[in-house]
Structures are given as C-alpha cells and as structure tokens.
Length: 223
Image 1 (cartoon, one colour):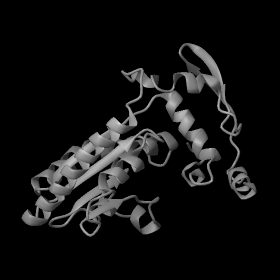
Image 2 (cartoon, one colour):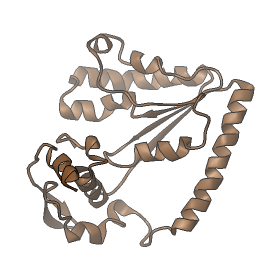
Image 3 (tube, one colour):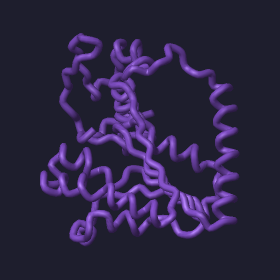
Image 4 (spheres, helix red, strand yellow):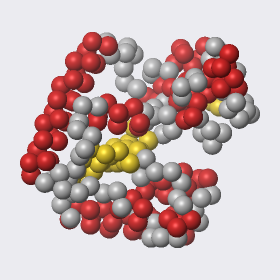
C-alpha cells in the first residue's frame, strides 16, 4: 500500500477546476483522493446517455463474445482473401479507446492484427509530410490494423494546445478528405470511430487514473 501511495503522489499536482454541471457550478480537484458525490450520482446519464441503468454484466459478456467470434471469422476471411482492414479510434480523453481496441483484438491472431499507438513525432517525423508516419503502419495483405488516435490529432488537440499553426490546421482540413479517398481507392476497408462520454464520467476516469498505481501513467496535466 505504501508503494501504491508513493506512486500516486508522484503524479504532478494540478490546480482545482470550476465547471458547470447540470446548471450548477462545481469544483473538481483531481488531487483530492475522495471523489465528489455529484460525480457518482450523475455519471451514468452524463452527456445525454439514453439509459438510466447499466447493462447487466452477463448480458454484456454474452453480447461481447458473439461479436468477438465474428471478428475472428472476419480475420480468417482477410487472411484467405488478402483483403485489408484499417480502423481509426478517436474520442474524448478517457473515452475508452484503448479498452475498446483491447476487447476488439482480444481473440484475434496477433500475427496479422496490429494496433498502432504513436508517441509524439520525432524530429525526423516532424519534418516529413504530415501523414507519412501513419502511412508507414498501414495494413498489408490480410492484415487488420487499428489506430489508437491518428492523424486526426491535427483536427482537435494540436490546434487547441498550440502544437500546429492555423495554416497547418486549415491545410489538414482541406487535404484529409482527399487522403482518405486514396485509402479507400487503394482497396483498404477503412473505418473511423468516435467514442464520446459525458463530463462526469470523464472526470471520474481522470480521478481513477490519478490515484490508481496501475493507471496513473495514462494521466498528465494536459488532460
């Protein structure tokens, strides 16, 4: 327990934030180990989630197993036909991109199912054509490739955080439809997914990352 506490305390401190939730101004301090009651009370229906009860675990597991079986079948089809699949996963921070990709690939053959989760560009990559470092990881014959975040960093986080210029952002918005048309014309089965969660759920997951010694590597002040 001492080691876990020391690990959690090693995460850089952040200032409390004030946000409006349900028309009320709330204060959230991720460095406080106690999660506020107003988050727990509203997290399920946050962000317009249309259900007021969680799905039963046994129903979820049954549904998930059926979908995973279909994915294994799809992978066998890819290997038999030489077709290629590429899926991008984008979404709000802590929306569950990594977890979704994990269960998607859980029973697939790792030899032909890859996940791509790139770090920030190296100096060499930063000097290349923007899409180049992603193209290097595109699927070859028979492969199923997922991207945990993608070139869409330039659509959202980069302009917000000042990691690209307004001109680079506009150029991205203009060029990306053409780039993705080339992907489809090449014969790659191309899918894009956006995962969304409500504010209360997001704050709960940030808090969990901040205080869990198994997850705090996922948390940074940028979040």
